[in-house]
Image (cartoon, rainbow, N blue to C red; front, side, top):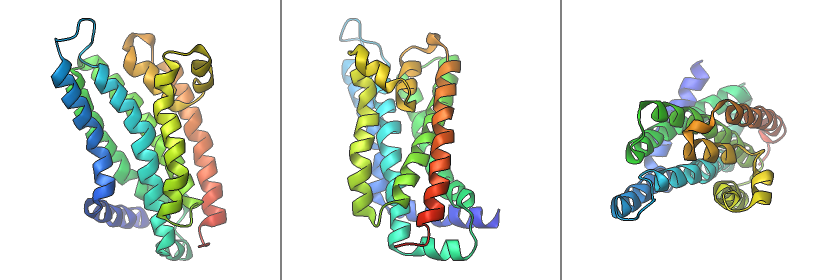
Length: 231
């Protein structure tokens, strides 16, 4: 517990000083707010939550993967991860410490999205449940990429194309049946399904999202055990 707390405090301080990471949690709700304000009530058939749901899905699929990968790659580059492993910090403790900071930042951003989208009480709750489940999956994936990256530049090179596919893929799936079938196994597509139609049910999407999380957790543990002490 002490190691988790120490990592959490360290990462909170580092994140507050890192503008390039902070902007990832700000830009998407700002875009959603601006687009909603400019189009609300002016285009027939356009819902008030359209841009919110689109930006929220992209935020989970892009920002969290890239920020998680960059943070952990930085730890490896600065050799701070080496000292943590030598000190006996377990993979789950490290991931919880780092992930908790990103998770809380994601929760704040998701709440902002919820208000911008003007969801009712039930929709707001469902929105937060699926968004934060997706956040966990993206943190896991980003963390795994970070473990396999020698530095932040390498992490960006790997995470950016993957994040773009997972972030924008669900938008393509809305207009293409083949793409929908392909992306249906990925958590970002399930988030998109729920936030665009809350009446569709959340049970099946959550099962798929948490199945993704289970696989990604195993991959991170393997990556940590193999790469944690290497530069």
